[in-house]
Amino acid sequence: MASLTTAADAPAVAGTDRFRPQWHFSARRNWLNDPNGLIYLNGTYHLFYQHNPYGADWGNMSWGHATSQDLLYWDEQPVAIPCDDQEAIFSGSAVFDRYNTSGLGTPDIPPLVAIYTSAYSDASPLAGRQAQSLAYSLDEGRTWTKYHGNPVLDRASAEFRDPKVFWYDGGAGSYWVMVAVEAVQRQVVLYKSADLKAWEFLSTFGPANATGGVWECPDLFELPIDGDPADTRWVLVVNINPGGIAGGSAGQYFIGEFDGEVFRSGSTVTEGLQEDGSRMREYGWLDWGRDYYAAVSFSNVPDGRRIMIGWMNNWDYAAATPTGGWRSAMSLPREVSLTRVGGMPVLRQHAVDPFTGTGSPWVRLGPQALAAGVLPVAGPAEVARIDVEFQPGTAGRVGLMVRMSGAERTLISYDVALGTLSLDRRESGQVDFHGAFPSVETVAVPLRDGRLRLQVFLDRCSVEVFAQDGLATITDLVFPSGAATALAIFAQGEGAHLVGFDVVGP
Image 1 (cartoon, helix red, strand yellow):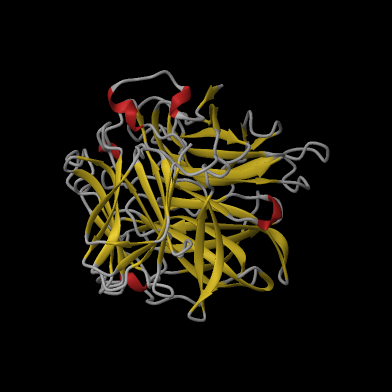
Image 2 (image 1 turned 120 degrees about the vertical axis):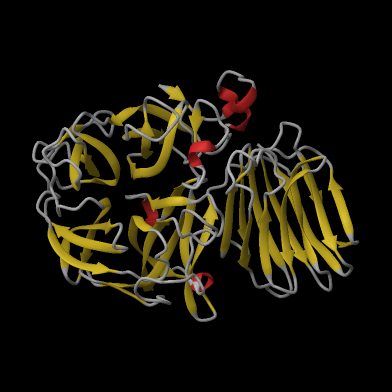
């Protein structure tokens, strides 16, 4: 079993391995993309993922597997469900079939069941199709057996994929619900089943809001608003590629009602296929950066917590990122909740924090006026959490410069007049490996009581920004030089105040 707890645990490797993250899961070698089969069982979080066991480029899609007790320290396990000459193993989900409804286990040993997309190869009688299949485990995910009756749901479609399955228990009854996509049609399709084998069509949703690319990797779950169990809504997540808010791949979400058969959105802005992107910024986006895709949530997490994780990359340039024999990592896990802003429910996200309990901050600055210019902050910050609160006042801009060295920097800035937060990685280090990589990501972030609160997570190849206690997020990859560890605070114009500033490291 290969431990992937931190990069420091692996042998020191020169060159491109300096980008291997410390707190974001990456496979020890080869290609990784969508998170799959996220589930908690008996004290262990299971992260399955799209994986090429044979190379650092996309292909030979199989389910890789990693486990964790705390969502921070991950152990890579053997490949869980490998591809073969008949099918590639595309994305899907996993459920704990507690009552053995599928008959794939026993009352004493209920199965863990993976529901995945079979992408049939030319050698298969179903060549060219995508259909939904099962595999099951009787030893808590260590070994897997494909169900002999696969596929269990076939629409004779070439673009029917990414099933997310959960147990529904409500007014319409108690049964399994599958949420999948007809990707090219930009449509979510819903089915129900009593046993995970025989599926009955329920309804469709979409096209709606962003439709500039295929729809993928849906999710559907219920959350209380501001923690009130008597006031809940359902959240439908739909990932899209291309056509994301920052270009390329991204994730959008809808908030509404689900009665066990039909999802009815209360947050739809536009219906049908959109011919232009003029209203893109009105839609609900999981993240406003370029590198948070295929995000889905864990099943069976205790205390009703809803925890999501995404692939920290973008299909625009994923095959070109300069990381050598391994490619791509996952985001930090995020606990999501609903809160009301302006009377409307919106998604709030908080990172599972790798720096909790690590002691006193490396650097702490108390309240002070910020003169126009750049204020260097002592100490290196390569892997760290930065907590900062600004009162911009009459200044034009305030923000942070992170991963600095000479002219190299990643800029996190707030434009007071526009009310927007931006992440600029155009001078962040290696940016010339793909034309789409140098970029500036922007999101509207209103001040609260005249203040801006940011929490920024730095890792060796990423910057994740959570604004106003998680009401907006920006996630971007960066590939800085090894010397780029300096940090600074800046203000353009007079009148800004720093309310508080902490840097916390591992």
